[in-house]
Length: 193
Image (tube, rainbow, N blue to C red; front, side, top):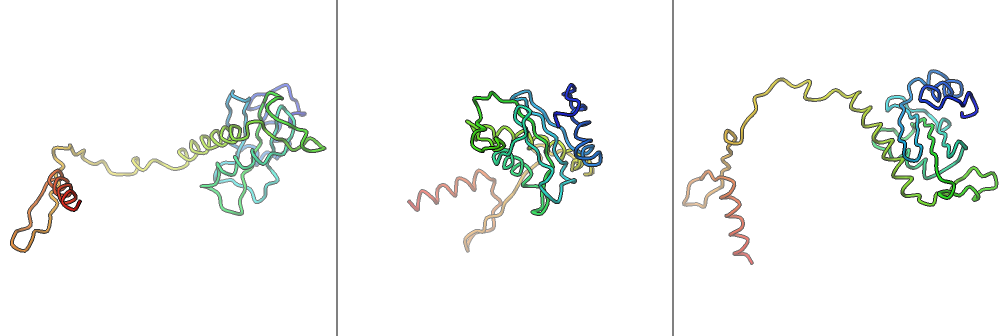
């Protein structure tokens, strides 16, 4: 992905490279999210366009393709409330880290990676992807308030409740306000102690 016309690191430049690798149909619908912290850039599936397999998940650290359970778990955790079991998010995630913050020497091919601060990396990626999905969900789902008929606002003075407490045999049902009910409840509780 970084080897194709790598002079353009903008969203559009990266998207053009994704078009060539993933295909235009898939790449054009991916959501883009970024954060200057950790050089984070990601293209992720919208909620209504998940894939049938995990084949389209790519993670890069300092422009090097890596395999990372931490990054993959952060991705799946962010999609958990929205995806069916047999559906998978497409994702291309880029991070730029200080070499002291990760170790590539845990696998002979240096593809697997171990982070010095795995929880921090997990939380960072999870939060960024979740924020993007929540923004997208707000765009897809119309606000309920837009579809409701206009209703009159009720002031606290207009809103009165009159709960009925069942009286003992020789008394009538008496409307009580909330403070009286609470006071009676507290008094009964003290008597029981």
